[in-house]
Image (cartoon, helix red, strand yellow):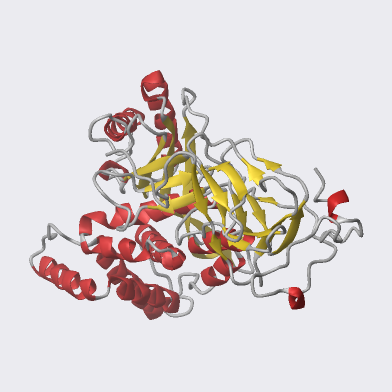
Length: 484
């Protein structure tokens, strides 16, 4: 099975659906329909027509079911306030969507929407950014600031404690296995990588503390970087609906590095402006991708993550030929018609996760990915590209007053590369730049609105053709927004 359609409505082509009535406009994005035709007309051949909740007039014509999210529509004809579908938790807001801050926007003429681009309330877009931990979200930045930084003993112990909390009851079980394997000088078949990292974090904290001020101690930067990255990723995605499933995957030791890399790659794609979703248990069935990029209200690109053993801290230098062989094998499998997570039916991205490759390692894999895409030619034209993410660290020296090195500091980092497929045959693209949501600015707010005290039992009163136009122009409705 090559994919799934999350957040879809059950509808038949060109069906009429009555929008739900809304009770309040407070702190909402409200579009005021002040003309006789629909508020917006799109071109979805298999779309829907949304009707006013009050008078059943057509307000959104030929639109995709989730093209307008979390927006209220006020009908001046009947005074009804209708709510478009609300954004679901975990639902992505694509790059280049049109977002509208809370407020009232008067539409005196029809919106012609040439494609499936999404319109969403600013609050919905900000909720998405918070869930994926994007740095362009103020709430996400505040949440990220709560994560400890540095490699002091206190920080390492904090991070290790956070790891124990994430693993919960599984930690004691795998920790016992770790002790047994240590006593027998063998590594248990189901040795748990995260438990190993947590234990090493505590050990490194004790070593640094024992060395004291001015003392020297050597720690394994690779393991510290991996521990830091793993726990920071779980902290980042803590507010996403998929978090419980991400944590549950840690019960299987073989899934640890794959799960961490899934969050790393999804974070990278979200940070450069893509609407990223992670598949979780309520959506999963059959062989499916790990995640997807929503490019508009209809189109999506599936994402499949691979973490080959040869890319996880290889014992010897990885050769270019070996990297090409590994990538080609996984691309063939993931993109195959039968059994692949990314079939010919929809476009896809294949992500490769790597750990501690050493200097130039991520560049070598990127070069190998380009070579694989070149060799495949048109045979994998539905693959948009290959993304490579490496967990590693950088060091910097601290100098004394005489200019001599007195200590070496380290900082965990994620290195990211994208190899785009020049033979990609679809018009669905991914963003590689900073987020570019388009703010609804061309629509002016009304100079005046019907006062709340004028609301009757059925909502706002109907505006007569000779009544003042609610836009505040001072002209009669028939000569203003009520005219043909």
